[in-house]
Length: 498
Image 1 (tube, rainbow, N blue to C red):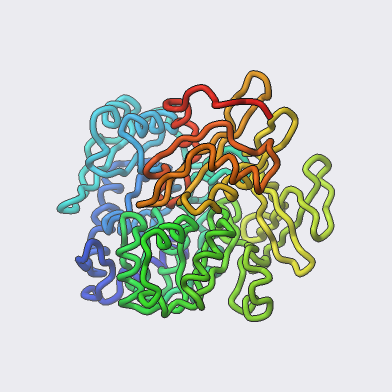
Image 2: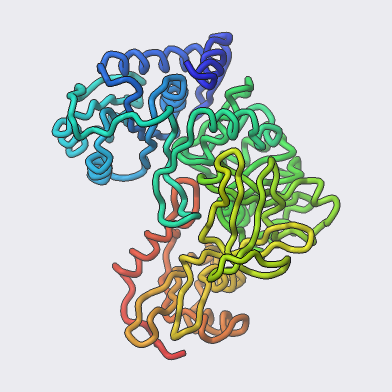
């Protein structure tokens, strides 16, 4: 058993009657979590897998999957995380691509094409049932020379967010999990008991919180995904001084017109995972003063957060660093380099962000993020290199245009992507989520609003209005889905002249 496994076993062997997880108002005990984890371990043992064989895992944010996460981390298999929020057909394609000896998923997803592919490949399929949680082997293991085999020490493989290029599986050894996410978890002091967990169990944000709980006795309130009413109720009941939210949540809270008194206990709200619009930050802090937003910068490839604004920075600099994503901590380092030459740049110059995360690698990690480090060592995120739109030779950062659109009083959320254009190469187009109960601004009004703030080359050539922008389970705007909306619904550009 690994050191990580021993820590998990110590946690599971605690008082069995202690409440551990609250889900949809019902509490699950530690004993239940332990029993479910052990039943899954027995089912895996019965498969007859090769030692250390990699296992696919399709986790949902439910108590039985939290228990399954602990069961898998206690063992010595490599865990390959598979994005849960997709159709069985999409999962079947992923299963064929990975060709793993075994997969664990929900009973409702292990149907049809998933079972057919598992049977064809000889991939053992273990189903976790939702309503009366049970473990059931639906497809037995059958050895195949094509199966992926164990290579190196056990690891957890997560899909990256694309910070260093196209999303890909990124392996973190159990030793690194222990050092980066358990022993050196910066979230530990940020929460009070109980912990509200709404980030997906299968991504870096959710796992960062889960791993931080391994050394604590904190109770968990588990949500399928973030929603404003449940969050407000949690804050009213527990009165935290510090909490954590994804960037998209701030606009949701503003649109819901949450009573400031209901969240008055909060001094600081930490956020990260995506850039927070300065206009949204300012509006939120004005409405909910004296609550302050403090931002961070991280990625799966870095092992989580590597830079953050700390409460003491707010005391020292007040609002001067409000739109920064912070200074590096925990031994991490940041630098800005020239996009073309890779030469390190001085403070105040914009370029590519590079990260040194000693807990993960001795090498500098090259990202596709643009940024600036000021004279005080604070990082400012300036967008993504791979998302840049080149319009007739003019480079446009989608985040810049989206920020301008968000500053319109009738816009709740906006996303900007590039669309191919025969004459100009690409043009910016925008999907708009109008403010609830407001008259949507017309394209002409949005044109003028953007033109008043940005060069004419940055004015979108087309707008698509939606009730709700598509988002990932961690509430980031799903840019692939945004592009698909235009492919399916957008018609000819209103104009393509610059």
